[in-house]
Length: 282
Image 1 (cartoon, one colour):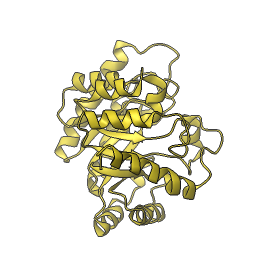
Image 2 (cartoon, rainbow, N blue to C red):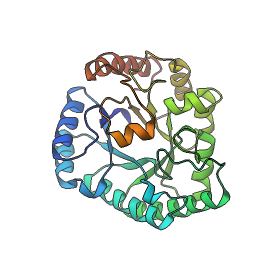
Image 3 (spheres, rainbow, N blue to C red):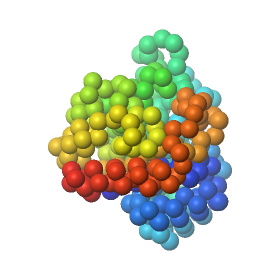
């Protein structure tokens, strides 16, 4: 999880053989250091096919997911453990390095009330068991703090750190996202500083989830703070072009947020890469 990567939603959200071939070829074309694969349906993934493609192109990968409602860790811990163990196994079989994202809950999970101690205890139990299984498979797990409209459980870097330390496993890290930070943190720098001891991965996503550099994310503050803490983890551009209805619903994206792939990869990617070079991160 080093260098500059891209979330494969740029090309596909369906990780079948065709989707894998398209996304990996495009990632190689744009010279990415790694890719992030969304595991919306882990059991259906042809892991051997993906692994062969990744190895052919010497392209590292990270996987990510949000738990489906039937496996929300806060209320259905046994189902969450089962779901995560399958995803961890697929991640390992593909030769990927980590499984990250909303591994503690669902995108769109809200009770209408503040989180309870029972919900957090259930999540900690799930992640403890999942981390043990991931350790056996040589996989790291990332906890992504997401905004209050997508999940009521872990919204800030500090909350993600609290859960990482509550679990206490040495293969769990914090995953930040500039889109969510722009909503939840009292300044992007504060979120990064709060997470610094556990931060290994960050999504670089514009304030409207569209083309980076065209919104109001404080990119200089973000990059300067990452440089100040000596960040050595993965920098993954995340802009959404191809979303199935269930993902659009969870993210509350109701209109096109970027014109097309050419706009994002032609303008947004160079913008983010140039900033990373400016601050000595790549």
